[in-house]
Length: 114
Length: 113
Image 1 (spheres, chains in turn green, purple):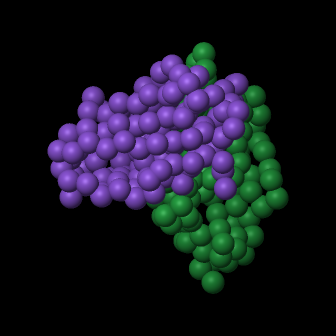
Image 2 (spheres, rainbow over the protein chains, first blue to last red):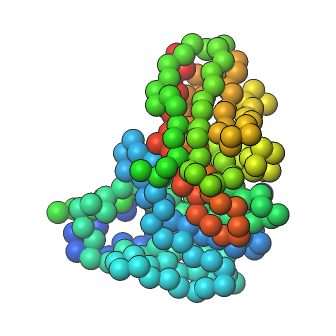
């Protein structure tokens, strides 16, 4: 099955700096790559996603890039703010006839230092 | 609020017992997914149901089972519980067309003592 590796496990950046989280996936059939943000004790919430026919997508301070050849995708957060502190999960999905559970990475704990 | 409702929010039970977790998907979503989140295993896909039928299986133990009812709500049954089953169990729902996002419920925190 699909395997998703995520790095780093913890990332500490100064407020205002950029943060980058990287993921690799194993199955070239994966065609959907969402990123979720999870605050302590709360549900994962989708912050951005990218499909396999697109190389880059941006939404205000957040951007995701996808390299299908290398099978990796990255989350970029610019001008980080204290409220960006959370655990971020990347995920990959293969859509096969409507069967499409997400395979998640292990998560990155992002800490924004004031 | 994602529109996905899970009950109960918290559950404490003893080893060997059986529990049922309930999920109501967003209005109009036909697909329901169950995920387990633990400190050592992270977020793991357990099982997916679509319009009442099992559609995909992930890392679900044989002691666990699920079903989706005609009104589209779903239940996850966990039996012969072990200490290691303590985790957050999330339900998510989506409209199953290619590449659509899944909306997560608030989760049920299960503690096995």
